[in-house]
Every structure is written in C-alpha cells, then in structure tokens.
Image (cartoon, rainbow, N blue to C red):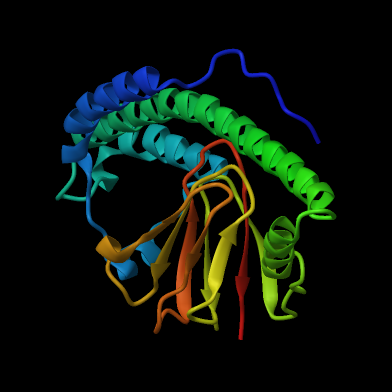
Length: 233
C-alpha cells in the first residue's frame, strides 16, 4: 500500500467549472426525469441483450411484415420514435459513463492516498506515544474505535450486477449498509417513495432507517458491478 501519483489533481477550479458544466447539462436532462412508484420499479421489465434481439425480430417480422398485428392504440411511427429515443439515450449514457469512470478512478486514488497518509500518521503516533502519554491516549482511543471490533455474524455481503438491482427482505434497521466498490448505489424502502431514496457513494455507508426491513438496492454504474454489505435479521 502506497501513495499513487495522480496525473493532475482535481483542483477547486476544476471542481467548480465541472459543477457549472454539469449544472447546464442537468437543466437540459432534468425534464426527462420520471418519478416511479415502488410498484412501477418492481414491475419494470429488465430488457437484456436477448430481449433486444427479440424486439428487433418482432418489429421486422410482425410489425413491418404484418402491420395488422399492431395494437390500434399504437403505430409503427411510434415504435420508430421509441427506437431512435432508445439509441440516443444509450449513447448519452455511454458518454456520461465515460466521464463517471474517470471520476470514479480518480476518487479511488484520492481515497487511497488519504488512507496511506493517515496510516503513516498513526504509525508515527504509535512510536511517539511511547514517550508521550497524551499521544498514547489518543492512539488507544482510535484503536479501540476502529481496530477492536469483530464483524457481526449477521452482516452479509452482496454482489449486484452492472445497472442491476436487488430486493432484500429482513434487513436490520438502524444498522449500516456499506458500499465496498466503486459504483454508486441507491437504496429505497420497497413500500416507500422515490424522494426518500438513499445514495451510497463508493467507500461510504448509510444507516437503514426504521421500518426499512425490505429494500431495493440499485447499482447506478453502467460499467462496474456493485459490492455492499448489510446487516440481516
């Protein structure tokens, strides 16, 4: 474990200009936001590669070849518009993910470097504590808080697929859900509303609120799987 040299630090100026640029993008994209109920989220069809192929075949071999099979409330024009919208959305997601990937990798480096330096400080403090009672007391306090705890046997670790979600039943409330990987996770009570969604950034944790015994955990990354742990009953 050592300090990793960054090509370019993310300076406050870069952060500010990037935030401003993202603000402009958000203004354009935000009208697309659709608030889904938990029921709608659970009933959403996961359209895999195989299902994409199925859609293409049905369009070509039924909708085009036999237009009489198209429901009266729909049209071929509507399907063409959806197809174009899907392609445009996928391209935007790919572009956004390329930016996210750069930031996620940079974040991992910065987190690593912070951890390396504080470990060096702690090592120095252990040495200095041999002749400095005040420092020794602080070191013992830190050690008791972060190095003296054994893992709970009820804590479980889960992998979550790229852009996937997992529904967990029997989650212990007022315990932490910890994000162990580079993707950003969203946590929502199955019977709750989307505005209550919790965001768990890489390396961070959130406390599961009272009543949230059944939750949906969603991986927002389109390139990285998610890994998290949570306490289960």
